[in-house]
Length: 225
Image 1 (tube, one colour):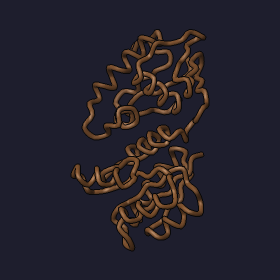
Image 2 (cartoon, one colour):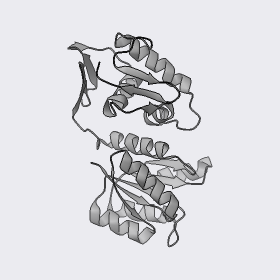
Image 3 (cartoon, helix red, strand yellow):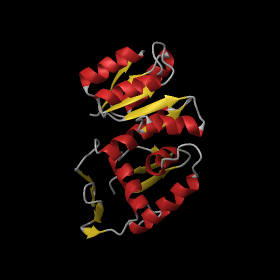
C-alpha cells in the first residue's frame, strides 16, 4: 500500500483529500504546516507527497526545496496559481506534477496514481491478470488467451489503468488525467475512440462486451468475462 503524506493547512480540504486517497487504497498521513510535513517526510520515507503552497509557517515552494535537499520522493504541488510561469518554476524546482485548486478527489487520486506509476512504485514488475488477459508491466506487452496483442502505447496505458483498477468504475476524466495527463481541457471523445479501438482488439463491442463494461453517465470498468 503506497504511503502518501498530505501537507495542507485547510482542515476541510485536508480531510476531503485524505478521505479520497484512503478510499483509493493509499496509506495517508497529513500535516497542517511545513515543518510538521518536513518531519514526516524525513521520518516516514513516504512514496509520495502532496504539498499545498499556501502554508501558514513557510511558503510551500520553500518547503519543496527543503524536501529536495533530503529526499527524491515524488511531490505533487497543489496550487491556486494557474499561470504557466509559476507552473514551470515549480517543476524546475523539483515538483513532479501539480493540481490546480479547487480540485476533486478523483483528480488528485488520478494524479497520484500517474506519478507513482511513472516512478515504478505501483505494481512495479508485476504482471496484471484478469481472466485471459495478462499484462506485463516490465515488458510492456499484453496477451489475450495466450496470443500477443498489437497495442499502441496509449492503448497499452489505457488497458493498464483499467486492469489496475479492475472491477472499479473509472471516469473518463480520470482516464484523461491518468493516461493523457489532461484532467482539465482534454476531450472525452479521445477516450471514447481509444476504448473503441481497444474493444475491437479484445474481440468485443460496446453492445456485446466481454471485458470492458460501460456504466452510462459514469465511466467504464474492466471485469472478468
